[in-house]
Amino acid sequence: MRKPELARLIAHNFVVVNIDVGRFDKNVKLAAQYGVPIRRGIPALAILNPRGRLLYAMSQGQFANAHTMDYAAFLKFFRQWEPRR
Image 1 (cartoon, rainbow, N blue to C red):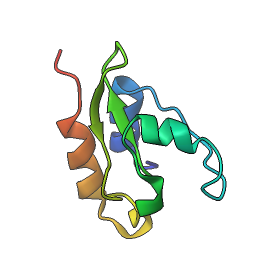
Image 2: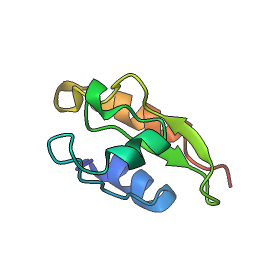
Image 3: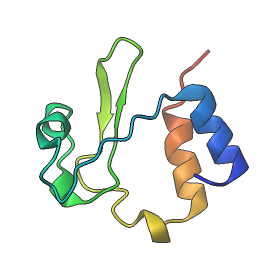
């Protein structure tokens, strides 16, 4: 998220809440509440609407290999969830 375009997109459209899962021994109930099986890989995320309703949860560890993922894939993912104004 260090690329300026992606950073702006995220900062303008999303509230990022970092959740510490420790060694998969912290906040696991919170992850489960939002349908994010952290054992499939982290980082993982859930996207909620402004009222807190779950819109999307990474259920398959989609960002587990984030360090090797193409920048365009991140940009595409966040653009698809960008709120329509």
